[in-house]
Length: 357
Image (cartoon, rainbow, N blue to C red; front, side, top):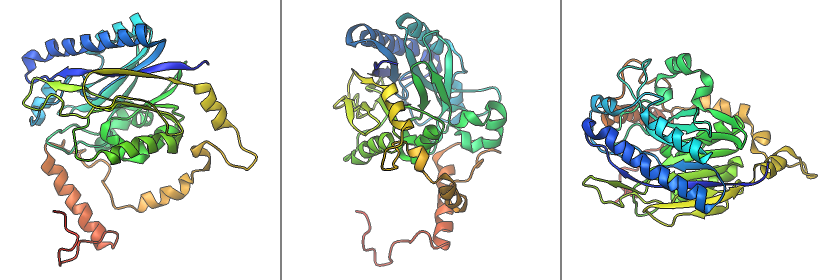
């Protein structure tokens, strides 16, 4: 397999605020995505894969009730995936699309989902976000929240799906999944060579942590990381550039291959060399070292500590769906109390020393 180019489409999004404008605005957002994908394919180089940002079809508009979110959500496939599929076929590329998904097997819930469409226009991978459904009343269900039923419906492989394609083995994680190294490692253990990361990150005083995590996830798992954010959310009271941009393509060694240095509309590209990556991951050096972290990782050893961990429980929202941030706050408070009682977490001193301003 020869090296080929991949592209990140940092596109603006007209935010869907009401159901009666949903389809029109989604079509408008996809039209711009497809135009930028066409630019990438025809002007930048021979693009094989293009990634879009989180919420690039719907946008974010909060707060909403659970019922309002579900009303806005779409099944898979839908008219939006059909429009993206048309572009994928026309341009002969793999193309992602992110949206809110409702499923008949999970009434009263919705998922934060990303699909990967191949050059035939077929959906070959659907990833449903695991982490983060606890902020500002974004009340989507994570697969672990309904673990048993999720596995019954989709199968265990759907928790961390990896698609085996002619251009490499591809996995997906979304936005806040980046903060949990286990997500990328789970994809790497299943053979992922490229990890797609649709994201939407607001401005903060410091972005050092997010920047470091991107590099770390790529380098510690020896995968290409394609992290694409949304350029701007249009049509709300938020600042147009309230999200920070900085889409990035990072090599398996942690090198920055391409970056958008800020918010706003942009397309970037870089070359990936899957055959070279495979060569490096399948050889053993004379020193006995392996470039492949899944060879040397002590999975069985780490698993024992995870089994003893006091952390977020699996299936926590199996009986009733998450409705608001308060639901998560109550569970998190109980976990913290248990960690303190077990001596695994120390509370701050009563003198107040070290308290944040």
